[in-house]
Length: 361
Ligand SMILES: Cc1ncc(COP(=O)(O)O)c(C=O)c1O
Image (cartoon, rainbow, N blue to C red; front, side, top):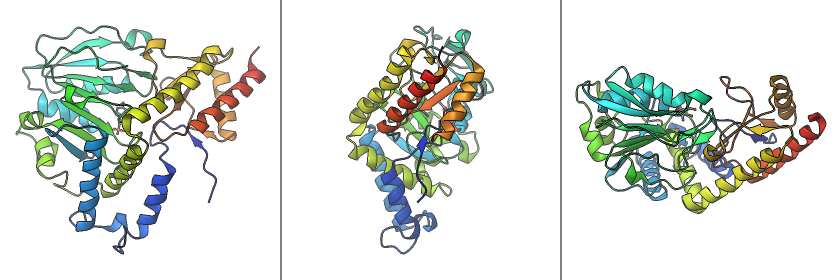
């Protein structure tokens, strides 16, 4: 087999090797069924067993209360940007948005089409390099929406934003879902594209409280109502069967790795190592404010765009892939999702040191 290299991609991203190996086995025959996982009907016994197991594992690993549905939707997290206001924001109400990066901006842009919006905080003034310390909420928002981790800018809410109690809070957790414990019960809804921490692209995990599902507008196309998917176990139409299967394998891997508390500690240690190096480097420096640093996406620069480009090209040649920063911000970004091995961070730090010694004056 071709040698695997260090993959720092922001998503789709590295998956646990044991998961890929198990999936490979099941491509030709799922268990002893004689039919590969890609070829099984979503209505058949074999796939339904996969689906049931995935839902059960998700509930267990994520500690998801019984009054929340676990849905597997399509159209990416980006489709949630419009489905949420379409279902939950009446014309005469206001939804509050915490704008901490490009993805929250996109979510807000969609909400504006459906009802009133209020920006409760924004860090746009310093190119989204920090998480605001305070928010100012509208009197009675239909919901509050925030992005727990800002994939492009390398910032992350350390915990829940200061939302007033009993406000329905919705979280786009696309880039840090299940990377640390999360209190689902303090949210009305949590959603995430699977392709960073949970599996392949093509499926979006939606965790939604029952009353929010019921509150949704009934005056919408069938596929755009959450209740359709809730009532039909995400199988109103053909679901992304392979993606759901793979999410199940990743959840099993998370459970075997000790669950979210253990994984959270590992993720904290992984990013801390890289930040510690950056903080003492004479060449590289982190771009996010110290108290807002992401454990998932570590963004850094040399301060010289040409040198950044030289670094990225040298890194690629040395077997470190995906380190180029998002096209909208430049610089570098190391995405260290759940499945990214600690040994890859040690190797990157060694490479950064070498580049520094050759290029710092
Ligand atoms: C925080 C966040 N939200 C939403 C998205 C968009 O996800 P999708 O490509 O699944 O629509 C991304 C993609 O990187 C993201 O990082």
